[in-house]
Amino acid sequence: MKNFDFCTDIPTLGEAKIISPLKKHTKPGEPEKRFISDDARVIVDVQINRLESDLKKNSSFDQAGPREKIYFDPSKLKCAIVTCGGLCPGLNDIIRSIVLELYHIYNVKTIYGIKHGLQGFIPDFQHDVMNLNPDSVSGIQNTGGSILGSSRGTQDIGMIVDCLERMTIGILFMVGGDGTLMASKRIVEEIEQRNLKISVIGIPKTIDNDIYLVSRSFGFDTAVDVATLAIKGAHNEAIAYPNGIGLVKLMGRHSGFLAATAALAQQDANFVLIPEVDISLDGKNGFLQALENRILHRKHAVVIVAEGAGQKLFDKQQKKFDPSGNIVLQDIGLFLKEKISQWFKAKNIPISLKYIDPSYIIRSLPANANDSVFCGFLGRDAVHAGMAGKTKLLISFWNNHYVHVPMDAASGKRKNLDPQGKLWQSILEATGQDTFFTD
Ligand SMILES: Nc1ncnc2c1ncn2[C@@H]1O[C@H](COP(=O)(O)OP(=O)(O)O)[C@@H](O)[C@H]1O
Ligand SMILES: O=P(O)(O)OC[C@H]1O[C@](O)(COP(=O)(O)O)[C@@H](O)[C@@H]1O
Ligand SMILES: [Mg+2]
Image (tube, rainbow, N blue to C red; front, side, top):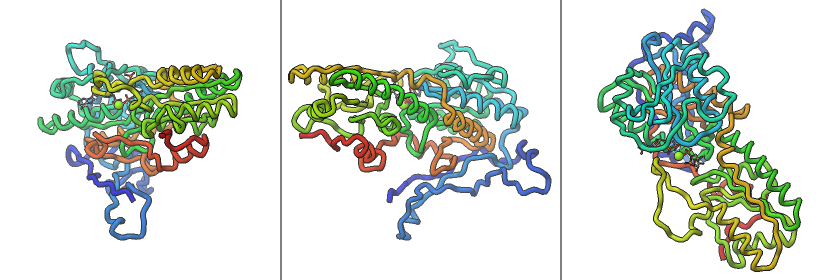
């Protein structure tokens, strides 16, 4: 059993003394089932063995949801929302659900939208602030992207907190991925240093689904849905031509969750290449030989490659980083396209290779129905946590429950696909591909 070794306690800004406005939804005399007690916990690891020593190591998260007493006075509270990093289906659903919950349920009428990620806090960029209310978020769930825009690039943390102070913000909702989480943690630390009463609530966003202690991030389900269309197209192209090969590149900088899940959703793939499993191209046990065998045997093949796969295949070069500090990857899709063409040319085997890269289409579309529902839960629970005066936390879906994950526990780590786990083993069974393409 895995030993999750971290503190699951959530800091609070102070004692919650104000009766929640949600109270009016409960009939007098009826039990207060609506509210979540601070004692309600969700066990981190549900897989236990009989050893008592292991049981003792189990930790638990705060259950998310409305508290009977809240910390902030709604009539005086100002909130801000910011979306950072790569686009992801569902960003607008999250914004809308936070705004509607604050406005209608908690009666918070001052909600600002910070434009273009962290840049929006920095005066030099001169991005206007948006006033968010039910009118300005009406219908936004039907469009992709983020109405607030986004950006990459580190900004001065002191200047961000200066801006929060100037705007007298009480709760800041930060929607973003691993990078945003690092930034939020540093913002909270600066807030603590200055002894301010500002809550920072993170909502994990990424189509890569690789945030630590988050079972599923919003947008992932939609990304899998859309990726299946690309795989279907690749398969149709492959079977239409003699020795047809459909090669699909999917996003996934460090984790192959999208590539692997999409391959299982649309079972046309014969090879799935992910960052977590090394590949070798040449030699009798290499990927190219396996692909040749498949073509000779079945006359068509579909290959899915995650963008972070096979990075060791490239000549060592000076590492490059994007403005946020993320490593800029070599293009494995185009590289494979070239290598496959060269291999079959050298063998004098004619092929028809079609390369499909749907990356930016996938992440910029609106959320599907399932993700929209999910975003609604995440947004509402983010508001409940902030209103209760909790801070330095992420709203996460874990063991089928919505929970508060401390930023300290989740930041700086990443969730990876386990090559020994069920997902990857299912890929091996569904595709029949070898575990490792090594000599
Ligand atoms: N260690 C860090 N300290 C401060 N800001 C950071 C840090 N890491 C990332 N950021 C900032 O957080 C924002 C989002 O990060 P990024 O990696 O682009 O996207 P994501 O949050 O989706 O991973 C960017 O503006 C980035 O510069
Ligand atoms: O937006 P860019 O700079 O092209 O970066 C692409 C990367 O962004 C993502 O779409 C999302 O990454 P983040 O969630 O960390 O922002 C990755 O899948 C992909 O590797
Ligand atoms: Mg990231």
